Length: 113
Length: 110
Image (cartoon, rainbow over all chains, first blue to last red; front, side, top):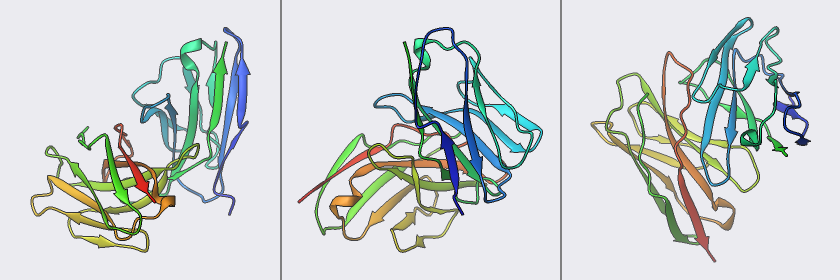
């Protein structure tokens, strides 16, 4: 199993540009989520999904959209990038929730100029 | 969402045991206690989790207080590779929201 994969590893955007961060998992996990981590901080939950077709907001959802059309994929879209979105983004998956282990991807380092 | 409180940083000598504390006084009966760690420039990785009883695995032990309002992650023999930020997180059985705090930065001295 490849586990949780994320692309790209690094990205530089200009203010106002849009892009999609990709996340995929091959473990058939129902739960997937996106976090951002600013320097010196813990991870903050952006959006999460409890299954295909079902998404919900986390702590810091503004400026981000998600969709979940398949179990495997959970892309994160930035519609109009802002410098405040400069961060490291982590995707994670989990089979059934709180009683199970969560698996994290390697992260995408995003810089918005 | 129930919150956790951890010391900002701790130091340990190599090959000595390390006890990382976590307070969670507002824990509910269905909250699992999870510990993750994050090595520099990497995503978090799972360490251990439990509900009520103490837990052991090859990486660490988790000691849970009888009233469940606190827990301690025990690394039996710290190595330089254990230097990381350790996060204590409460996760409800029926929910999925992992709320990370700022964690404890563990420094291991050679």
